[in-house]
Amino acid sequence: DSTYFPRYFEALSQHSHLILPSPEDAEMNKELASYLAAFHINSKLDIPIVFEGKLLGVLSCEETRGYRNWVLEDRHFGHTIADIVAIMIEQSARRKAEKALKESEERLRFITQQSIDGIISVNNSDQIISWNYGAEQMFGYHG
Image (cartoon, rainbow, N blue to C red; front, side, top):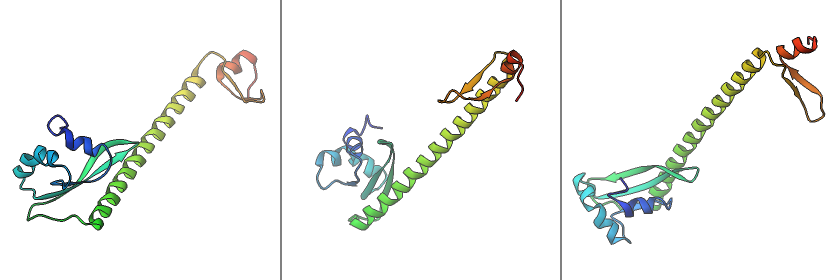
């Protein structure tokens, strides 16, 4: 909760990884000391999961056996996993949007075809590209 850990969440909002205890931020260490102690966490690597510029979650790697010096390879691996999760979220969001669009188009097509009002669609060249049952009845033309 950002209410209890404001420095931590502010740092994550910058979309870069965090190593805890922080070698550069004594105040953040103080803020998180009780959390780390409660779960017997000696060192922690947190990598934000970002989608469309928003923080969605955190990939957390925790060491409870002793202090761990998180090396560059650890950070790169974590960022790769976080990027894969973000891509999966993006693909899921795209599939949902495509499904919603398809359903909306089907509803519109159904409403248009069932309407007793004449509905005629034209393209930019003023050519008729579609019409509904109501237009057929009004103009007596059946395609």
